[in-house]
Every structure is written in C-alpha cells, then in structure tokens.
Length: 248
Image 1 (cartoon, helix red, strand yellow):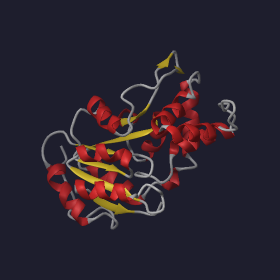
Image 2 (cartoon, one colour):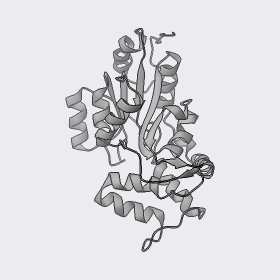
Image 3 (cartoon, helix red, strand yellow):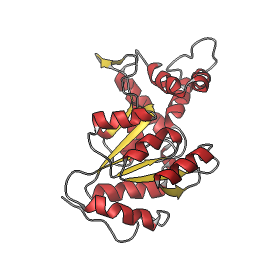
Image 4 (cartoon, one colour):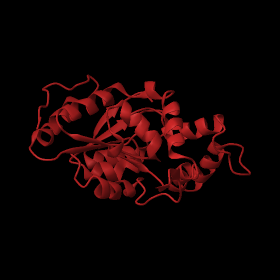
C-alpha cells in the first residue's frame, strides 16, 4: 500500500497547515477514506441545477403545471424545503431509461467540466496517489455527479448522491434513503462508505455535519457564492476546519 505524502502541498493555494495535518492520517496503515461534497467544493456551480436546465433545453422532461420550466418548479420547492427540491430534481426523471439519463448527464457535464477547481483536482489526485479512497457525497443526483467525478478519476461506485430505484432499466421513485443532505450525508457515509473519513471537504452548512465527522475538516470558501455566511464561518471556527478561499 502506497502511503507516500509529498512534503510540499500539491497546489500553492492549499494551506501548508492543512497538508501537515493530513500527513499522520494519510500515511498510517489501514483503510483511509476522504469525502468531498461536489457542487461548490470540487467545482463551481450546481451540476444538479445545470442538468435540470439541460433537460429543459433539450425537451427531455416537461415541466409540471403551472411552472414554465423545470428550474422554476425546482426553485419553488427549494424555497420551502431544500431537501424536497433536491429529491424532486431526481424524481422528475422517473420513467426515463437509465442509459438515456447517463447520456444526458455526460452531455450536460461537457458544459461544466472547465469549472473544476484546480487546487481540488490536485488534492484529489494526491490523495488517490497516496492510496486514500476518494468518495464524492452530494445532494445532486448520482448520474450527473458521477459524470463530474469521473473527470477527477473517481469511479461511479464511490459516488454517494441522491438516487432513485432503477427497475428494468428505467428510473423510478421515490428517492432512496438516507438522502445525502445535511445530517443525511453522515448517515449515507456510514451506510455506503463504512469508515470515518480522514478528510471531509464541503462549502456550505449542508456539509457541516459531514465535515465534523472527519479527522480533518476543510471549508472551500467562495466569496460571493452566498454560502459563506456568518453562521458557516462560526461553524468552521468552532470545528477547527481549515479554509481554502477560491473564486466562485
């Protein structure tokens, strides 16, 4: 098992103190895992929302009345309950052939792939090179997240995201539980990953429970994104998380 961890950070934007804090966990023997939120953490923007726009633009799924678009319906749900909106963004594809969903996700991702944060790409690669299992845990649906994760060398089997049952090749409903949002991310990691992460990285209060479970926490802060609130700053300080400031 390769437990090598370079002396210097793999990217100049990564805090040297984070690099040193990871060394004991990354270089020890045994299974080691790292968990990353997707949207706003590995890349800018929200791929789940981008995929809804893609489905709308290509006429793959019709918006429900009285809404004029899928995004309008989604935003209305999220305004009342974010988790309900995230679930609906997956359930709205019920009845579609899974191969078609995979095709649409890959097509959508092509317009998003330049948004990967370079420091995060480098960090994921360094962890993988050191033998750490990299997992992506997201409240966007698993087909679009898997398309992005593949760009970073993370297999679909290590994507924990919102999902629905698939029967006879077609998507069904409702979403499977635990749904990976907020505390649900911790429950999903326990169920799917089965190990305490050496690193937990996220960008919002939705990720805070997941980050807190890790040995080392990393807040990816993007000023202007709307996520870097006083409450999030306070949670990061209280949890002793490291901070990586990036442009949204």
